[in-house]
Length: 425
Ligand SMILES: *Cc1c(COP(=O)(O)O)cnc(C)c1O
Image (cartoon, rainbow, N blue to C red; front, side):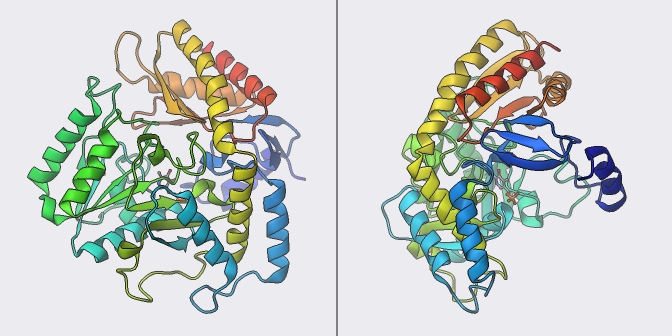
C-alpha cells in the first residue's frame, strides 16, 4: 500500500483543491473508536466522520446487511421499480422520530438534498415562499442550502448568487446573547420574523435543535418549543434539521425529544446508515402528501444498499442502546472537560448534549473568540494521534463526536490526548 506521503503527492495532482482534508494521513481501516492509517499509525476517533459512524465503522450488522444486499441487487431506482428495503426504512423512521401522528418519508442521498426537499415540501404544502433560518445555522453546500447556511467562509465565499426568500433571525446562544432565556430569545426572533417577513408569508421555520457546524450551540430551554408553537399558530411548517443530532447522538434518538418538541418535518442523514450515503425527510402525512406524485425523487435516493445499511444501523442502535451509550460518554467526558476548563482560563464554556460536546475558547476574561488557540489545540491533538474537529462561526469551538460504540479505554485515551493538547496553549 502507498504511504500517506505518496498518496498526498498523487492527490495534489488529481483532486480539486477546494476539497480539503483535516489531516494528512490516509485511512486504511477503522472500527470501534479508532482509525488506522496506511502508515500503520492508530488514531483515536473523536470525529466519527462528522457524526456519521455512530454505530462505528464497519459495524458487523451493517457489513452483513450490505454484503447480502449487494449480491441480490444494487440499484433499480425506486421511481422505476420499488423494493421492500426503502419501505422498511420509512416505516422505521415513522416509529423512531418524535410525534405519534401519521407520517410519511421520502429518501435522498445527502443531508443537503434532504434539506432542499424539506423546503420544497413546505413551500408546496403552504403555498408560501419565505424560509426562516437562524444565525450560525448550517444546512449544506448546494445552492439553496448555502443560502440557508450562515457562515460565509468557507461555505459561501464567491459562490453566489444565492437563492431568494431566505430570512435569518437571531439564535438563542446563551454564552453570547447575555444569557437571554429561551422564551426571551424566541420572542425576539419572532418579533423579527413578524416585522421583516410577515407571519402569513412564512412557509417554514428551519432550525437545528443543537447547532452543528455553527458551534454546538444549545439554545436556552424554551426556545425551540416557543418557535414550534409560533409556527403552528402562523400556519408555517416547523422543520428540525437533525442531520447531525439524530440517531442517538445527543442521548436520545432525536434532539427534539429533549424538550418534547414534535417537528412537522425532520431531516436526517449522517448517522442514519453507518457510513453509507442516505438521507430522509420524515413528517406529518398531510404535509408530505401535499406534493403531487412525481414531484419528489432522484435517481439514487433510497438506494437499496444504503437502505439495508440503515436498517442494520437502526437495529444496532436499538440492540446496543446507543442513546444510553451517548449519555454514558457525556457522563465520562463532561467532568474531564469541566476540570480542563477550571485549569485553562481560555475555555469559556463547556456545552452540548450526550456525545455531542463542545469546548468554546475565548480570550481569557472575555467572550472574544480565540480561533488561533483553537487551531493550535486541534493541531496538537492531530500530531498526537487524536482525530478532533473544530467548528463555530468564529472557528473557536472544539467538538467531540466520538462513535457511540467507543470503548471506555479509547475514550479515556482520547480525553487524555485532548488534555495534553491544551497544554500547548
Ligand atoms: C452535515 C449537515 C448538513 C448537510 O449534510 P450533507 O450530507 O453534507 O449534505 C445539513 N444540516 C446539518 C445540521 C448538518 O450537520
